Structures are given as structure tokens and as C-alpha cells.
Length: 317
Image 1 (cartoon, rainbow, N blue to C red):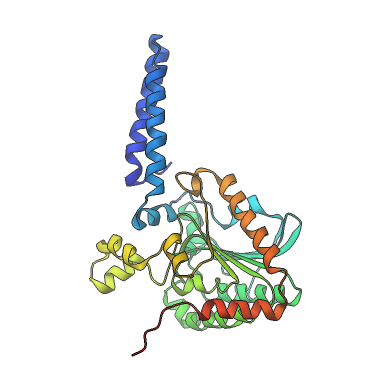
Image 2 (spheres, one colour; image 1 turned 90 degrees about the vertical axis):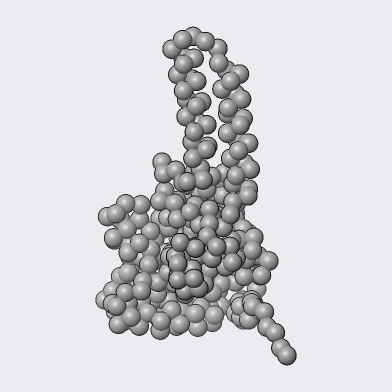
């Protein structure tokens, strides 16, 4: 398993525990008290560490290569998932996957960005960076859900929309803008969850929702900390300073009413226990559907509009 820089002290304690267990087994010595002391030390250190992570450390967990991806969550949360392909113009961007499913028997349209866990998978999914045809596919599924009165759930984990020439040639900015406009008009409940990286317009193109949540160690920002540091200080190495200034964590975003809540992860991050984090997400989705289902289509549309209109602060002289 990949060990992050700030997790190395925990790894060293666990290595010491394994060493003591080996000595105890080979020599017959009773080292149970020493082992118990080290195990308690490891638990206390982990609890304190993960409760007080800096934004730059959360950034590392959000990008962890073993973090659950869209398909992992679908497999743990949904039943009867049927993937729907293509944007109806001959393209099927694998960086965005979506389809019909049920969550505890409730029909939903679930759509999300997809990352791989190997080089081969990342090439297939373009490292989670959608192209215009991906946003057009998502929009097709949004409209399908709206037509048949099916709630929408989006799961977002992207470093941003693909910035390559091919994407610009096929109107990347326009595709995202149309999604923003048409998602605002939907008359069904829309729930968005940022599960890892939620970066720039690439994330927002799936996040114009009635309820927006972040996993505990996910982040949501207008620009990546590295990009911000490169612009402000011409030095990407100052990403940690930028991450602090950008207020990218769930707790900061809740203070600014950008998101509606934080979804707890297992100690150490979502990659430590797929079942637990999926169960926490499922509960939030079902509770939100119960709340939003009480509103009419026009009320859902107005609530979504008001939610985004009140974001930000204005100063007048």
C-alpha cells in the first residue's frame, strides 16, 4: 500500500510491532505488554494526525492512488446499475460514466468522473479529465432523468477538464457552460458529492446541485493549488501555501455555504475501508432524497438557483 510522507511515523510504529511479534514467536518471550503499548501509541497518533491534517495533507489523501473510484462506489452503493454510453454524436468519453441504478430500491441516474488505478486504466479514463463529449454525455443523461422524473446523483473526482488542443477544438468551455445552464433548469433532485479532487470548471460541470457534499479528505477549488502557486508566485512548489489560502477543505467550504456538509471517512482515508465510506455516502444520499422529494419541480429549480446566487461576498462603497 502506498504510504504518504506524513504517514511514515505510523508505518515505523507498525513495523516495530511486527518485529516484536516475530521476536516473541521465535523466542517464546512474552512481549504482549510492549506490543499493546505500541499499538495504543499507533492508534493515538493516527487519531490525532488525521483529525488535524493540513490542507496540503488532505490534498495527498484526495489523490491517493488506492482511493475508491466511481465504479467502486457504484458497486458498493447501488443495485442494478446499467451504464448508458455516448453523447449521441458518435463519441463516448470514458472519463465520465453514468447510467440508471437503484439505491435501496430507489431509481436514480448516477453519473461521475472516473479515474483508473493503473497506468492502463488511467489512459482509458484520461486520468479523470473529461473532454467536451463527456460533458455532453452527462447532459444527455441529465435530460433523460429530468424527462422521466428520476433523481440525479453525481460523484466527482477530477483534477479538471482536459486542457488539450483536441478538447479546445471541440468546444470544452462551451460544453461546460451549457451543463451549468441546463443543470440549473432541472426539475428533479440533484445531489453532488466530491469524492476526491473537485477542481475548477471540470468539477462544477457536474455539481450544479440542490445538495453538494464533500468527503472528509476531498477538496473543492476553483484552481489546483499547484496552478494557483504557479500564477501567484511563479513557483508550483508553493502549493502548500496556496492550498491553505484557497480554503479547499470541507470545513472551510461549509463556513462559506459552498457545500452542504462533510461525509466522514475511515481513519486514514476512504481507501482504508471502502464499505464504511460507501455506507456513509449512501446514508447522506438517501436522507437528501427524502428531504428533496418533498419539493415540487419548480421549488427544486428555485432552491438550486438561490443556493448558487448567494455564494460569494460583495463589497459596495
